[in-house]
Length: 188
Image 1 (cartoon, rainbow, N blue to C red):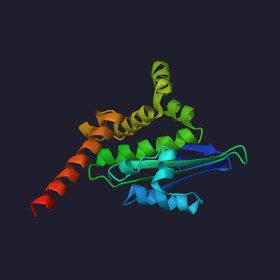
Image 2: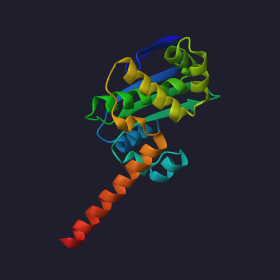
Image 3: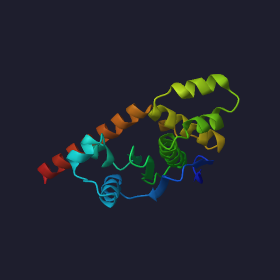
Image 4: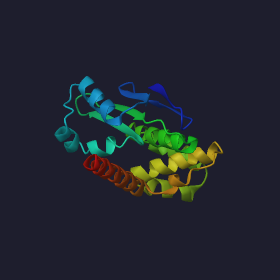
């Protein structure tokens, strides 16, 4: 076992020696970073491959959020690797929430979800049950909210919108922007 620390979550634990975590930090482009990491591990990075891996190139191209990429080499070695990376966000609460959200994905994939639930809920048995029952995206959002509350940071109201609704709003914004660009080109 080796130590692991998730900075935004303030969460320390241990993972097996054949598990790996890489926080790539802030990146300019989520899609470019994803393609780079896939190339580094000898995987294709074209859009068809990404879609087969349930990775949306269009969502990653939006440029507002973060991403968790993970690999699982089972049963060959049983190793797991998680990478997280994220766009810098101007609002402190959104930025910290985003980073904590991505760290939570990594913690879950590295087998640390139950330990993180214990840290967040402490002695609150009902809260533990609720956290255990959440889908991963919702659990990651709750962990991000917990960090904001723990650090006593004024939350941006956008944090309280569900993950799926936030994604749809970002997609809608991108579509409107692209339509405006087309219309601007048609006017010129």
